[in-house]
Length: 346
Ligand SMILES: [Zn+2]
Image (cartoon, rainbow, N blue to C red):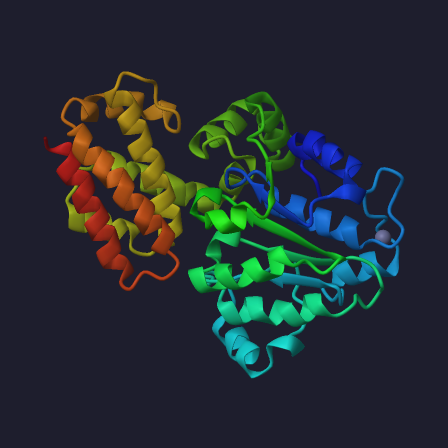
């Protein structure tokens, strides 16, 4: 599906359907619907009787296979689970096509590995089963490790006529320049706040004020904000914010206890937003994510070491990248919270 705020970009893309660059790099902030956009693009490229505007028909056999997750001319490259990795080593060319949606356990592995990319060489080297386009979706493209990215270069450089590559990432800057330069970039934007709020209010069945508060906490990304409609997620978010707001008065061990059972990705993301807001307040700007915490942030800002806070932001960025496999989640939390406290006791 295409979310309403991405429809202008979608219409422009469909208009060029027949002369698309063979490798498209779709990038933009997390939580705006890039995945769904890329899957819809793959579906429309594989469709055997597209609608007049170029969109997938939804009723041909190709559309049917795509919906079932077994189109023979489609490959999804995503971080592989451990058992899939072993299968891949046994016979990468024979791996079953994977579904474009519903992938992922609670903690997906981080890397797309070289054997997964090598398996593509065979896929792209033979003619399509249906004599039409083949599509490779790589998501998130920044999960390719260096060896995988290098292996992909060869395939991107010598595309076999009918293969289309669609790479999706929140962080195009971490892709090797050699990969980026072989793709046509398509940046997708955050929606305008009123568009996002209207969609979220309707989709989650809440009023506009609630929708705006969730959007603020999610940095304006509607699909991230949508998660707060789940009461459990909303409660977790509140707990993380309250815990962070309590530092440095709250003991670190106590705060770490409160967060210990929470998925690290959740509290790291919120902590990052919290640090951004504190940085903003320190330089006299309004908080962006937690406007309701303006007073608390104001009082913290008066005793914040801005340089230490900037260093913390850099460290948190590293933590966020490694968060899928923390060696010891409790230690990661404690370290992060100690850094927060250090920045606040200037
Ligand atoms: Zn179709």
